[in-house]
Length: 528
Ligand code: GBH
Figure (cartoon, rainbow, N blue to C red):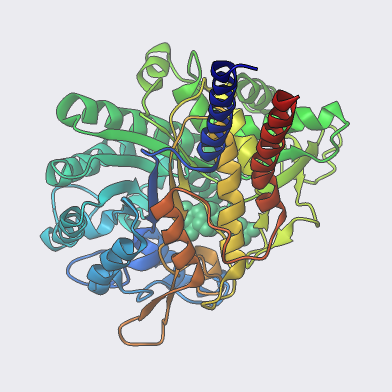
């Protein structure tokens, strides 16, 4: 063989090798522009519940008047005292090296009556301080306008079942845009509308624990969607310096029995009832509620003797007004469920009639093989995240997605190996989704630090930082997961070095191994 031919061959093989290597690298790292963040919410961290003019929220009201409804009878009167120690919080965000801090604003801290006739300057200044401190260090504030803290006085008007709240919410949002809009460029209106409506009005569960299944929940959802859309338009018309969206939540549904096509149907129903209820009107091609919800709730309502559907109807103008009112698809997801159909005639699950769960017509469970966490509802199932992201891509034509919450609980401690495993395996699933073409733009880990976990009180910990709730300064200390997460953020790669070899590791390395086999094969072939 002559010299130039062998040089040519050499070059070709090098090129092949290089392209495979680059491909592997690409598959193993997150995109350069990927946004990393950590999250908290006001009630869970602020404490100082009645300080400097703040009034009572529905969570203050619930925890003060019905402590027996909370696992450890606790409340968030003090919790991590971020109202005092916010500087330390921002310092931790810096230590982690993330570019985004997602936090929420307490409505009754800013507008104690709920209305804008009385604006509490001290409340606004608290958030101004946080925002300014974040910006000093180049950290993007990502503000949630409503993470469940309704002023109690507005609850007394019927809360989110009262359409009056739409305009009152617009006023509240306007106060925030006027005050912070010059510096805050990332907003979400509502955190987890399903929880705000179903878990709070349909059950004796999240505040206000209204326990009225199947009716007020849909009024709540209707008002929430209108309030969201109107605030979106106001922002776009008057301010429009940044992005604004909504964050929904779901535990990824899987068929209980993979071979039963009925169970596949149950999966689709669960997606549409949990996510589609709020996201279909915004992200689907033509807007409005999912057809399956309109049909099922309509038919069941009729059977049950109601004059009209318990699911309210949007006018055509309202459908248009709500359609496409989110710059990104915000999603919170922690775990998976298994579902099977629950037919109306038999109702074997004995769901209350009417109720959201009876309307959906499914029975849920969790797989005993999925690893447990510190919470009964949360089992570790990373491939659920991949399914979910693919479903969103397909259903809503690949919208830009922010994973606004994902994380795991334990019972506490600094050596949180399980949390490291959780983040690594869920992030591997997310990376797979990105390599599959899902437009995931960012990941916000839940949570910056241990905090008040709603009905579970202080019995479950989600933090990257440990908080010593007994110390006067509520001392915050990084856990192992904080160190690993900051390494991931720095390198844009998942970091397995802290852990013994586990499945996901070997699978991500398989790509590289097969690449090497390929290269060797080609070298041998070419030398023949
Ligand atoms: C998110 O909600 C919240 O946005 C966040 O504030 C919260 O800290 C985080 O999740 C972790 O929970 O006890 O079986 O009846 C997710 C909603 C709320 C889902 C509590 C599970 C308990 C269900 N989570 N809920 S159960």
